Image (cartoon, rainbow, N blue to C red; front, side, top):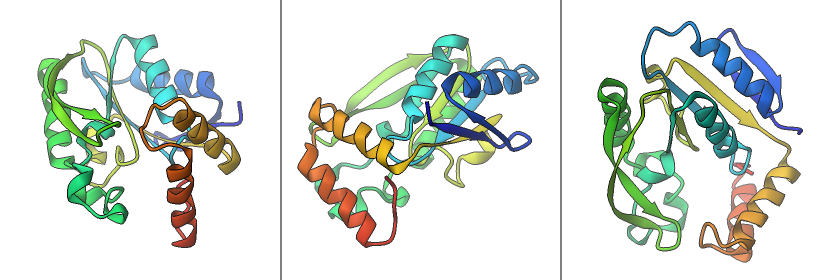
Length: 193
C-alpha cells in the first residue's frame, strides 16, 4: 500500500496501515488514560476511515467521524460546506470529553444521502476513541488527543477511491458532482484530493 501515516509523537513516519497501527498502539501503550483519544486526519479518500476502523478493531475502541458534525448542507452555499467554521466542532469537543470521562455520549447521526443530521444515537467505548475526518486535527481539538495522525496517499489513489465511493452510492453525490467539486478545489488552488 502506498499510504503513509505521520504521527506527531516524536514525528514518526510509517508506510502502510499495519505499520501505522503498530506505531499508534506503541504510542498508546504509555498512556495512563482508560480511554485515550486518537485524532486522524488527511485529505479526502487518503485512508483516514480505514486506518481508524482497523485501529479501533485492534484495540476494542470506537471510531467517531467528524462527518457526524457537518452542517445541514441546505443552509449553506456549496463553497461553505467544507469549511470548519460551519461544522459543530464545539459539540465534537464536548462529545470527545464525555466519551473520555464516561465511556459514552449521545452523538449526531449524519446522512450523506440527505446531507444533514438525522437525530442522535448513544455510542459507547471502554477502549480508545479514534476521531477521524477532515477536521479531526482542527486547532480547537488537537490538545484533546494523546496521538495525532496525518494520513496521506497519492492524488491518483485518492481520486480512484473517491470515485469508487461515489459509484457505490455511499456519499450521495455521484461521480460527476464529485468530479466538479474536485475541479473547483483544484481551480481554487486548494488540492484536497
